[in-house]
Image 1: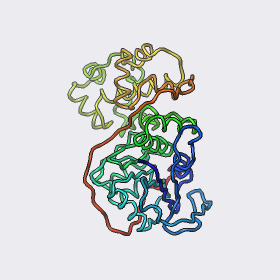
Image 2: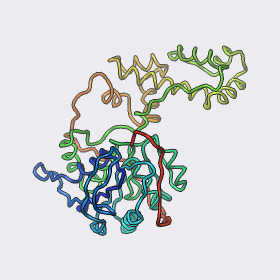
Image 3: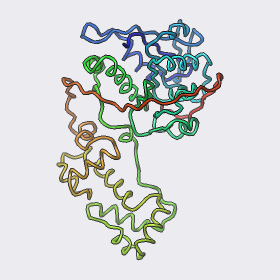
Length: 353
């Protein structure tokens, strides 16, 4: 049962992500039928902690309360901050006794330094996904999802995805009703559709030369047509095999994959800016049918066109919180390995946590 929650404050932590943990777990919502947790904020060296923004937060309690916590929560923190060895110890001990461990955004790097991501799937902010995979090659980083739950080790993606990850833990332990009460109080959906890939701006692939500029410009103007490799090759005055080989060499992907990505980008734009029907958008973007467009949305963006429009479109109805929606990606039992005690964990410097 999820009762005692300990948030470990880190020097250089990001205030918003720290606030997410406090908001989900630190407020007594029993008056509205929600949970009331035994919530603690602790740190390795009590006193004033400078945040990433530059102001201080005073934390009076050391790490003692973490010894029997049901959940250890790690907020995002500043790139290159020194991580106290006792923080890594607390994370390892929590994982070893089967407690939940939750990280938000770049907090995943601390879980990696503690060794508990080895053999597990994980995620972090999409800007840091490559760096996490490089720093900790024994974890499988999924940059597209909002969070990953791998056997009680939950890694949240960028910033607000920490809400999704935290509510997932509540839902798993206390049920959908408890998570819905918290979501209503926070004025957020109890469970968002899709993954963080839908929030990543994806411009057209940059070409390494202008040899395909003419044909790709024409392809962009002709997305509503049924474009085959044979047709494109004839227009480029090449054989289909040569065209496909050179296209991949120049743009790093196949003609079909490139077309599908550009069609998705156009469909996203039309869903955001117009009230046209899904069938009409599917026709205008070359998907042909709404069902085909839906297939590509789910496969690439982990959401449906309808859900995407509900979130980003010109008309955004108030979310319906009446229903209980279980879910969230869960992954199987995996091995773990500890890493050396001292650690200085670095992630790319950026204004986004």
